[in-house]
Length: 216
Length: 144
Image (tube, chains in turn red, purple):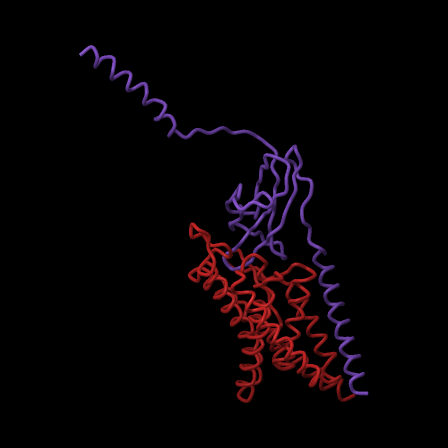
């Protein structure tokens, strides 16, 4: 889902940069006000783990591959704003230093996976946690991967409608929604099961470790 | 009648070049190509996906097609130059990089990833932990 440069029209990425910049500024202020020293090392470790996890691509039917993001785990364990800022940091490092995901597409990647991924994961976690903690963690992971894939499929599929040359040929990403929606949603709905299991196991491990080490 | 005897064979003769123009021919030769191989981080081939090759700075591609089953593109540049290779899959994966060929149309260089796969992970993780170290210092300073 890390969209490279040249796939998204400026009509989309320029306004998204404005939206993302505002959210990053607000998120930084919230982190500065609310982040405590006890949470910081855990958040740092999980952000680093999320970065490393994104390199583990899993082959999927159809010859494509996808990777887990750890966004659901970040959101369930540390809250929405912490998760959004941590995920944005991961995407920024990947785009600026390693060329994984474009610089022009950074706001789309950050908003889809970081903002809405974290928001949906945190929402699923808070909604289901009173009913069943394991299910809450699992669905936080699943939805934190699948909702971003839907948003990115919609954004990619909109490109042929947004910019084309005089012959009507798309200038940026060439495929429409009929192709992008199944191409992204089906593999990520399957991979979301893996992300859900990872969030379930990771969430319980973090909880146990925090209980043990923060009370020493 | 005599005129017709001359006219019809002449008409047939003039039609021969047009008819042969639609007869597709082929030749088979061996040659040297620049082979680009595209694959995911887990070495899965980027197979049967669309690609385009452009001379640097130009908008019209010199070659378009799909990668083969092993994710390869065979490119036969006809001159020295820098060529932009764009590959796009339906699910949004893709690459956009350049390669350079010399006057003999053989490969002389190409964009390379900044870091190898595992080097990237180590550097990225170290950077993230370092940044959080600075945030920790900032929070401590803010408290005092």
